[in-house]
Length: 240
Image (cartoon, rainbow, N blue to C red; front, side, top):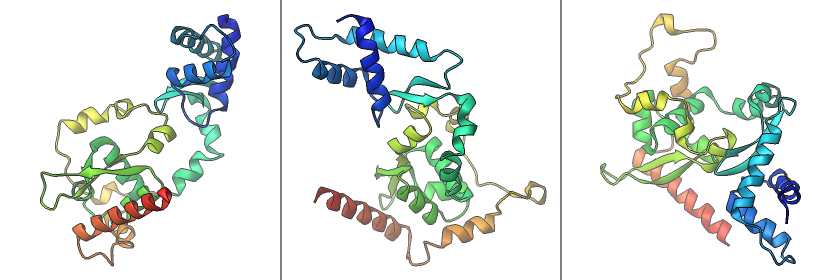
């Protein structure tokens, strides 16, 4: 089968898929579609086809492109059009996250895997509520426990949904501030009068917001166990 014949089918697969497709995914799907052919399509042909598709959509008059994101190939809007597209869904999604939740998400993204206690040491306020909201929105996951700390607290990491939403293949693609934070201890922010703007959220406001969901929790260990139990119950329900 000629490459020119393969390309439209691979393009259709990437376009129609609701998740990123790897070259191996494409190879399996395309060979299944053309199982009646004696000659099998090779991984080299898939790679060449994807390269051709990417080159095609790199042209300036296309508002979208084929880019590797979330571990595979996807059709994604080009950066120049992000602000426009955000009016449909992006801004609405992010507006549902409070300033405190966004701050917590950024800390987890750069310092993962990280415990809630470590998050709170950086923020300087209780973070139960923010962590819960991020779990609900599936932007973070419980990735294990820190065996070296007393009580073996849960540790949190960003999820695949986080990677997909922000168009990342790995945390290595986060802005370079990660390299700065990795080399230094991050102290709680010291807020002075001249730090405040009309859009700023004070430390007290952040504390009040985060405290909403933590009033019934006796301590950090109980909070962590509650989260873990909920995750386990949800997993059992899905399994049933």
